[in-house]
Image 1 (cartoon, rainbow over the protein chains, first blue to last red):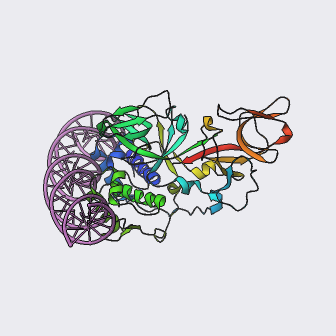
Image 2: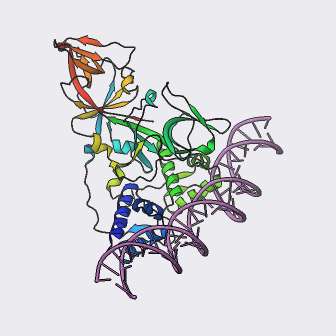
Length: 205
Length: 205
DNA sequence: GTTTGCCGTTGTCGGTCAGTTAGCATATAC
DNA sequence: GTATATGCTAACTGACCGACAACGGCAAAC
């Protein structure tokens, strides 16, 4: 029989894998449970292993596996249910006609890849690039970026912002907002770490 | 089981090929990961080859091939493959960290419904509403719209445009661009037919 | 034909990180 | 008092990671 904490641990492992496709490490589990000690977390892992609920490859990072439960049901989704027809370009002079058999787009296939995540944007610093307060941006994790890419930059390990990046000759980094009422800021390289770059943006009305 | 860095490497190779049609070289992978050493990158490549996830033609530049994953059997369309984790809101003061609140978003479920379609936007008439030249808009077919909704209006059965709509007291219709260099236009009701209203917008970078 | 430079390959070195184990402390239930 | 669950710190080990150096193949530049 599991204790509360053990059950919480198992639940977290479950949803973490669901979400990320790979298992968490002890530290991540600890953060979720509010435990700072990896040793304590490890004791839970051990207990769950004894109960035969997980499998652990000893020594390896992220070495936790779930023990198979009932194989998940198939989710038979026929393809067209997941696509939107692309009716063409809207430009002066042409009505949008009956949408025949033309191109379709599957938003998931278009945007969803491992290593990507979504953020809701707060603030107006990128409005001139068409990224508005409340918009969602699709980011891809990475540590470096080329000039003029839009990135999430973490400054002094504290403040995260969405900005356009310029890698200066001298190694410093300039973060440029797309809002003429704000000014670019220049930082030494050590102060800035990049957490991801933008690959998409969307908005619902 | 892959390490974090190995997974990031594989993801990058994947999207690089997707994007460019040819595989990246070590240096390019390194730049993406923030590594200056080709040797380190090479070790990842080796590991991925050992895991049978890629194939490498030894010695050649850009000699990486992806191993077909279709063959890898199950393709357990587990849900997370179609969702993106929502990492939270990006605002000053908070690093994007452990993706805690397990919210995820499934773009298809979010946007795809019967009767909707996608249009590519041409022109700048809606830039102040964050709809740029080249953006895609998701429309829902309908014949009427309330004030201030963004619609596709077909004028004189000829010209289709994306505009904000105002239904005037006298029955006429005003179409308002979101671009201060353009003026609203007023049409009699007979001249305008609405083909759909906006429900979403997206853009790829 | 030689040189130069890019690229992949291999190996080594030192630093960091994750998992593991053990010992100590506290609170609660029996 | 004893047992159990919980949490911490400290220390050990091996995996992992990144830099660097060196080599060979190849192609463009001279």
